[in-house]
Image 1 (tube, one colour):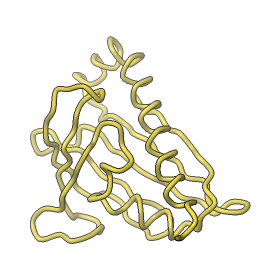
Image 2: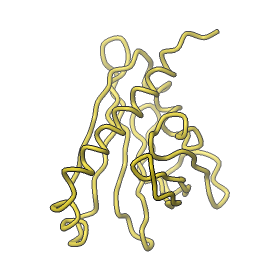
Image 3: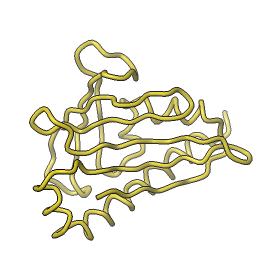
Amino acid sequence: MHESVTVHMRATPEQVFDLVSDVTRIGSYSPETFEAEWLDGATGPAVGATFRGHVKRNGRGPVYWTTCVVASCVPGAEFGFDVLTGGKASSTWSYRIVAAEGGSDVTESFRLADTLPLKVYWALLGWARGKTNRNGMQATLEAIKAEVEREPT
């Protein structure tokens, strides 16, 4: 009940981290989450900080808000968050950034919580949702790559 995608970017891990950890910019990259905002006084990434994302499922709908909590935050290396459903993590999304030849390898991944309802969901619809998530992660990383590799004007 997990998937991941890796893209190489000609940028430092710190440059990539600055983009992926600024949730207010997700609408520039993601095909599903078109905006996000920090909550409860948070102004940036830190473990325990909360934010909410405005999602258009499958790029078509339904449209809804999700509340998330930052689960990992290591500048230049990793940013991850849990999507909450009923106050509990239903999925975890993360970006891992590793210095690699001429830049960084950036891996976006998601993992569904290990619960019976999600196991049933994944068994029945995982093939479709997994493909959608892989395509979405690829599109997100390619958009981040285009921005971080853009020449300054």
